[in-house]
Amino acid sequence: MFQSEKKYQAFKKKIWLSSPTMHGEELRYMTQAFETNWMSTVGENVDEIEKGIAEKIGCNYAVALSSGTAALHLAMKLAEVKRGEKVFCSDMTFSATVNPVRYEDGDQIFIDTERDTWNMDPEALEKAFCLYPEVRIVVLAHLYGTPGKLDEIRAVCNRHGAIIVEDAAESLGATYKGIQTGRFGNIGAISFNGNKIITGTSGGMLLTDDREQANKARKWSTQSRENAPWYQHEEIGYNYRMSNVIAGVARGQLPHLEEHISQKKAIYERYKAGFKDLPVKMNPYDEKNSEPNFWLSCILIDEEAMCRQVRSDSDACYIAEHGRSCPSEILETLARYNAEGRPIWKPMHMQPIYRMNEFITREGSGRARTNAYIAGKGIDVGMDIFNRGLCLPSDNKMTEEEQSIIIDIVRSCFD
Image 1 (cartoon, one colour):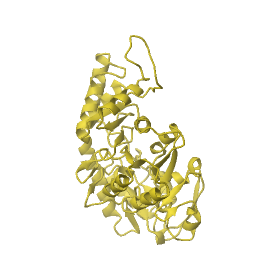
Image 2 (cartoon, helix red, strand yellow):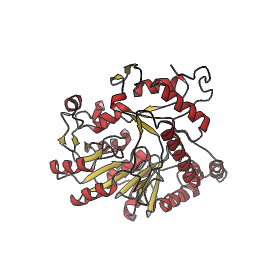
Image 3 (cartoon, helix red, strand yellow):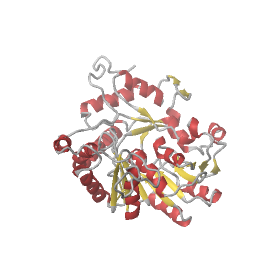
Image 4 (tube, helix red, strand yellow):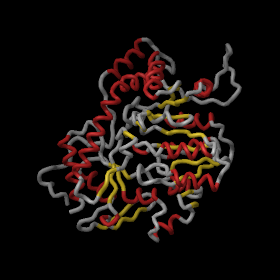
């Protein structure tokens, strides 16, 4: 039972995991689109947000699309994924990172996670190339706004002649050795979904240095219309272009990116200080080489401090124990007080739709991962982080007082 229950009741206004933070410029640009009647997928807002993102990331071209998923799908087309072709993918991520491989009838092979940043393990990636030397595409995501081990991953890919499709949907504004994420892949993608560090309500961008790739993506995103006086189509296209209205929201948000990052970092640091004597650790990052955007603050409960927890594909249960807790208990308690948390992304190799896909750890094939995990060998890092980790309320409109209450709620779960 939360020890301060008599002092604090449930939050009257819900504390969100991560909700949009609006400033006013967004409405001005949306109104401009309305008043000039540019309400379709062309207009000044689209042009300006493409220029602004390309300048921020440091790439030559940014193509405004309807979602980050659309950007990743067109990236798969640009990479020319063939039917049945194997593609190495980050394992601990949202399904939108890897689904586009299947859109093009490719076959995902999932690469295990490393503990230092919770991203793709370069050693496991090297092992994967030993097993499948023919693979030529690697899909890499930066979890919760934290850059992966980019030097090591790029070195592995270069040795094997593979290209990188970089999913920077969660990491806009994060840097590795001073370079923006989204800049490290041959093709990149970012997202403006409503919960991201800046938003367009929806929308995304494909990032590239190649003019021909940018032109192809723009063509495909507008139903592949040919340059003819009538509707002429010579290849399959998609309705993926960003609207001028949504672009107006993103355009108004972009100047506030660094402000949002600063607010998110302050939330991370307050959690870190508030939990310093608890048996938990914050989601890690490479403090020497990287600066995350701190999109979501997460904790990982120490193994010896875990109470008993069992999860099925759709439910979870636990047994409360003095001095111990688990993600299910903490998330349930937060929800009782009207605060939103979230489990860590369930690794792709554990998802019902992908359970038969190959999964590679640094030890090699991970088909026997479950038995090895139960035996305590610890080869399946992603499964372990999913079991012991959770995302905390990270909304940058949360006050310090509200965050202090969240910290007390979490601490109470270990009483």
